[in-house]
Length: 427
Image (cartoon, rainbow, N blue to C red; front, side):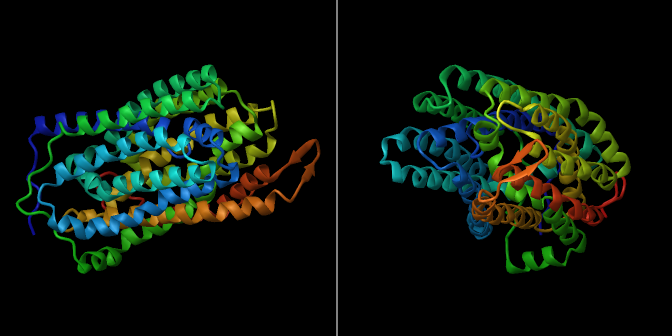
């Protein structure tokens, strides 16, 4: 089986720079147009989508990961993978742009279906190329610089996301969270960033391969026999378990339960990103020196406290949430550096590397899909409860996030499944 030819130092440096441009522009696109973002959530609620049903959107996006199975056989026929990656990357934002413009014109019962279908196909485009794009990046990053480059990548992306978050917060504040046309305009602007992200990625150099790597059933067998990779995948599932339920409802909680102004939501998001941005250089260096596991032990208690802080929030009393997001930025910064570094360490340097990325993404996104679906009836049950604890009145969403915090406590033990070796170790 052929292996990628090494890039020159200049090609590597330039390509990593274009990868940073791509992730920055894509970060802005996802900040505006992602299925659980402030703008998209406000837009969906404005056109009549029930707030508890937002979990279905999260599930639909994650279910699109099944397209990776199609991709694993399709790429056997694709000779020019870079062109394939770029072409599909353009379809995603263009499809979302079309859906945003058309959906408000449909009858009310069809609007959630239209949005859900567009989200599914757009996400499918991403997942179709994700293993090969991940492999492209992984084979470009020098092994001794993984932690530091990932940290730098997060910082560059965060700067773009901070700018787009501020712009979005100001836009929704001025236009109003119920202004369908104005929110649609913001989503269209976000789609433009998605198009630009694909165009900038075209400038990166892909390592030359004599023959495209062929996928076969044996590739999946190899993946499942790689014990370090299987351990990491199981560990990731357990550590992330509460987030499979919680992720779809952050903006619903902000807008409907805490009744926060859009500018305050944006300011809270910027504070989160600034803390994360300032810490990632040090976190990347620590990850390179000590391995991911030590950092992950510090991360989990922060996640527990984060979820429990939601119980302190009420209409006009959002300060516990602002504090919680500032502190959880530390935990997310740790995970953002440690998770990909762990993944790169557990994947062999030769063989069908995209198959490993495909399985990892399929498992992760499949869990988000199941969690999004289960969260809807779970919230329905919790809404029937009305607990009082001292001066606090705990409604369905409060209990939902408290339950996530309690689940996180035993899940902390899954950190033992992550690699603990120092830089240069692959085990």
